[in-house]
Image (cartoon, rainbow, N blue to C red):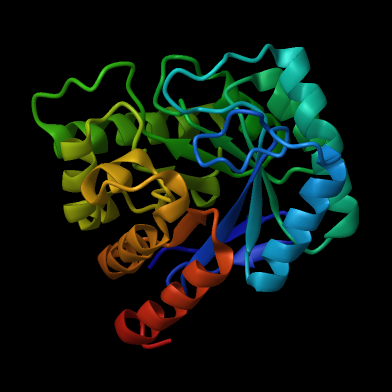
Length: 278
């Protein structure tokens, strides 16, 4: 039994049901074509509208990011990324005081500014990397840390055991730096530092991550492996995403990070009724 995690205004009682994280991309170049800077809309107004809609649809937490992580993305310097996300985090916090907010960034200065603006969770896509500054920041501020698995190159001798070992090392480091055990969430990093074959193997072996004793987030929404399997563009990958949501929950996933909240909430509730009897 995994003990609950307090994330800002909410307590997440892991195992009772699956939680849903809605994605808010404050970028012009998101792979999923949902970046709020790609159109002509005012980004703060667009982010507020998106956040309010997602919460109304059942999102339990909102994840704000200001730099695309897709392959070949245009790097964003810290000042630009901070200027993108901080006003939106502040606006979402004011409009949705009861909704936990996550900041998705690899830059400590951006994460720190977002925490000051009202973010409650740090989502670190290089949580298993050599830099421990994000874990130090989480410890200093007493906020939960989402550690994602990633590698610069998709090279493995024994894929699943190495993913587990990398995450275990990152968890141990975070604990030594002062992050609370109950404040750690893991993400196996579907689509990050992995081939499509690795990603499919990861889905087949998700249950093995329960050995780490921490809640698991799964982020497959609209990703390229789904498009490769079905030969479909990002906008047409909803059904594939829902399949991974249901199978992930059956394997023990606690939280899913998605673009399409309504459909994934419904898939999660149905799967919960079967596998959790909830």
